[in-house]
Image (cartoon, rainbow, N blue to C red):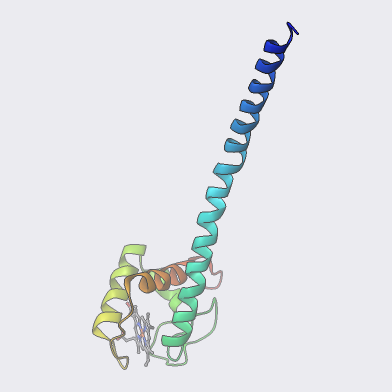
Length: 127
Ligand code: HEC
């Protein structure tokens, strides 16, 4: 019976260590994974938007030509522009319309998705 308090302390310490271990071992990596998943979803939504609204003229892929020869493939935009530059160009192109394309009123989260998608083309090998 005199062992009970020591036993309790050992058990509590083990439990605390386990909780701490779980917190460190699981929380940090899953936070990173969640960011990655959110980013992947944003890119996917952006690609859907671009497929719907832009692919009639612009090539969206890692290679190939644009359907409208005057419209630069999106991968060439990221080659020329920084992320801020691209964001600016996008805002102008969307709000004012450009060349044969009328203004396109999408909400800020949609234009963020579009930006994520076009930014993802920075990984494209063939630009
Ligand atoms: C009807 C054809 C057409 C559609 C649809 C279209 N574009 Fe364009 N886009 C063009 C042409 C042509 C140019 C090149 C001439 C110009 O810049 O005005 C261009 C240029 C651009 C540029 C400027 C690139 C630079 O040189 O800096 C951006 C950014 C852009 N488009 C984004 C978009 C986005 C985003 C969409 C979809 C929401 C879209 N475009 C849909 C025809 C189109």
